[in-house]
Length: 171
Image (cartoon, rainbow, N blue to C red):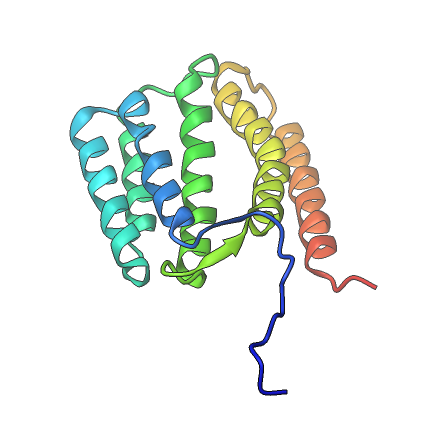
């Protein structure tokens, strides 16, 4: 019993623990294609600060700058930058949360990224559709506000049902 221990752990593919923080910086670099230069520089600088000090919440500052920078463009349903900015801001949020809980000096299983990224994808699908609907609304003539209010109330009720179902504990 005095010999060396020869235990092996089969954990699957491992990636550096700093990967989520580095991905925040990489994703925030998309800001250069989406928003004007000055807010993009601020967003990337905040992402770098968030990568170095994840508890500073600077990654969310980067997401905020990308959101504010998007306001420089007129909203249009056929402009791809609005949809890309929504996806980038949400992805920074997901990766920033991972960067806060993963030790950057260690390693993590690559499959740790799978569930948050799948959740990001499943949230992005309806979010992109809602964004398209919101961008399309100013083009739709509304003669009777009552019918529009009923449709909006039904959409709100459907969203509430989805949120309650997602928040309820699984059996």
